[in-house]
Amino acid sequence: MTEPEQNATAVASLVVGPTDLASAISADPADTFPDVFATARLVALMEIASARVLRPALQPGQLSVGVSVDVAHTAATPAGATVTATARLVGREGKLFVFEVIAQDGGGEIGRCTHRRAIVASQRLLDGAVRRNRGLGLG
Image (cartoon, rainbow, N blue to C red):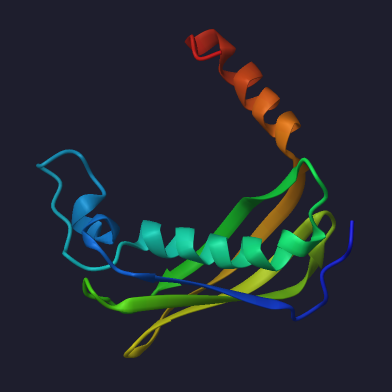
C-alpha cells in the first residue's frame, strides 16, 4: 500500500436535489422533515470526499470503508444549492485513517466532522456480511 500523505485532501460536490432533502429520507408519510439538505446525505458526501483521499492507496481488490463519523450539521441548505465537502487526512489511529471534513454551500460552512476509515479487502468484507446474516435468509 502506498501511504497517503498527511494533509492530503479531496473534494466531493453535489447539487441538492429532491432525493437529497430531509423530507425525502423516510418512506413513512407520518414522519415530517423539512425540505432542506438531509444530514444523512451530508454524511454520505463527507464519506465520499474522505474515500477519494484514500483512493490512490488502494491495491486491487481493496476499498475503504467508514468506521465512525462525529458530525455537526450547523446550517440548512435549500434544494438547488451546491454543497462541497473537503476532506483532509489528519492522521492515523492504528489501522484507521482520520479525516477532518468541512462542508460548505454558497452561504458558507454548513457542517464539519471527524471521520475514520479503514482499508479492507472487498471480498472479505462481503463474505463477512453474508456470514453474519445467513440466519436471516439473506445468504
